[in-house]
Image (cartoon, rainbow, N blue to C red; front, top):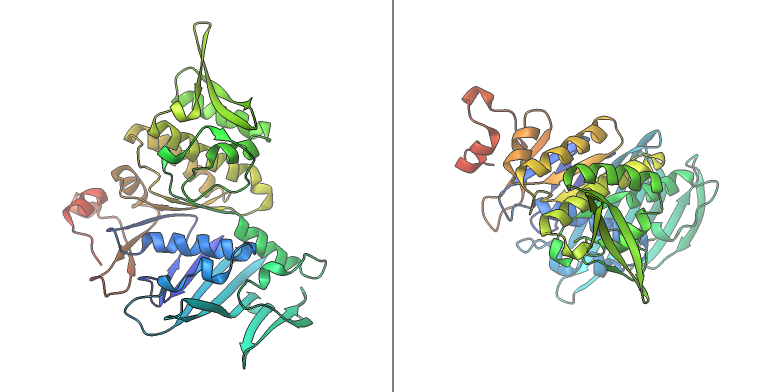
Length: 375
């Protein structure tokens, strides 16, 4: 489980630290830094994939504008594999040339080293460690990329390899239904940050027929007469279609003929069923920004109950950003609910826990609406 993230000198996050439980609700006014936390998780995931340069993941424009420091620092604490991992990344920027390099990248397991990348006197060096934390090979590496991402799996670095796989088990998404099309030209293992590639991701997910059967069952309770999705070949692409049956009559609709709310619901349920399916890999974290957009109150409640059951069974970790009254009133009394605030555009993000306010006789969502919860 993702236990903690520390961020310094990234947009409004200055000396910022937040801890997580299995199910978390992040709240606060717009511009207070909630989405920045999700951004950092997504960029770390991209960086550790090895497919992107540090300047692509953390451009100089993400430095805190009112600070003079050119060093950006990020730390993650991840619990799993029988211990506690700590990942550290420091990025050194040349603010006026829009350049950046990795200053250091480190990985620890129960405070013992698994990997170190350091720059000393303009010489960049990787120091490897075996699973028993004894020193391994030492070599130079490019400071523009993640050195951790380049290490091949072997019998003596299973702890390191577990951590990289765990970072792949994160979905960070803000669903934009208008961008979700029915056409797919290839399977894709990762869901895009806006879910625009949902049809291609569904092609990958649908290889597991047990998962698809469970998903179909839940969706049939939401959409009257729904019988399932079908992928139909169309030239060099496949089209995601939905199938409905009533009174021995059938009808087929392209996925992009669904309403915006229907597309969002399909995506939300697919995410949690996918995470449940890969539970054999242990932990999975989903970060969903405004899951309630485009969705009616009666529709979000069953999904939230399903999500909560998975989190309670330690099959899933969820981080949600929401202003939705249903989510607020349901989650505030019993869950890790965190309020984000800033004094103004030149102030850092600060957080505090929100506790139940039933002694006032006013719901948490009403307190938010009245502006009685602040930083």
